[in-house]
Image (cartoon, rainbow, N blue to C red; front, side, top):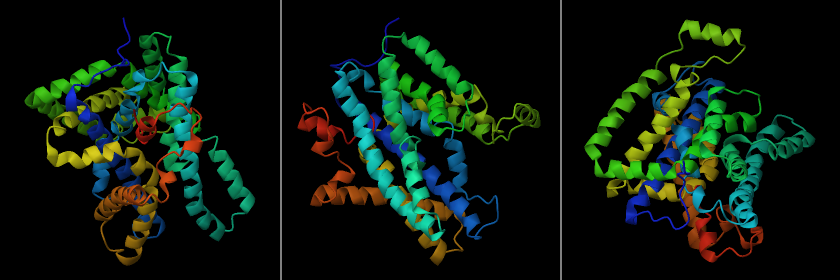
Length: 384
């Protein structure tokens, strides 16, 4: 059976490829939403603004999105890999490793600058802070772990390109089902997410066919989305039965918080959720009212890299000046700030030309000097 990945010369069929940007925009909103909501709830307790265990109404949305939020993000990231996986190793390494490594290091320095202020105030010695930074070059750090993980997956997939795709997909699925908990974020997240990334690469053609079907059969696609939403909701909002808790406890495993996190179930819901997001975004791409999703999708790496700063700042301002605001509304305001802030920062750098290195890899950071200006511009995209 032939690989179903995209091949060089792939034609998307006019604007039908718009749904990919919509999907990336949809996913980046839900990723930021998770960090914003859980961060508000955690720090509200630490500041004694809320009781331990308190959650806001936004937590329901975050819980519902848990099965598909990251699976779809990784699937989209692997979608166009077939177009470039056959390039020379130098060009491939430059675009798929050096590119993301550059942004990881730049924004790691920025995040550590924020973190160090708190560590210094707590009396943490400079040597320990420096050690933490060096360790972050080996182990993914904080919200930047996705940027760290992508190059790993790109390299692994290139090394496995001659292995039959069904075998790779099957092994990747087993890694997700396991589940693997080593304590290393790099190992654990790779095992949990690689199946979706590889599926995006190896099954790209049927994924595009699915999007085309959804655009042409809106009523049927909406019917599927309705059924999926009900099933996804049942599993995410059903607490773990006592019998399963006992099994996980006996195996010395972390007890899942809901049924959606059970082995096999999580893989099934992740795949179904990824399909649902493709269908939804294919439909949305037909309507200009959702154009903001396309913009966010085209600049998803911008939002992902920079959302942490406005998130922290807005959260602290609201805690100080509006401590009585409910957690759900606080989380929503923090989410909006975390999305809008990076967009403003990016547009500022684009218009003025100042600090452009934050979002665009400069020429000196390219090791493949044959890259064209068009490729350099395209490299802003987080998923190609």
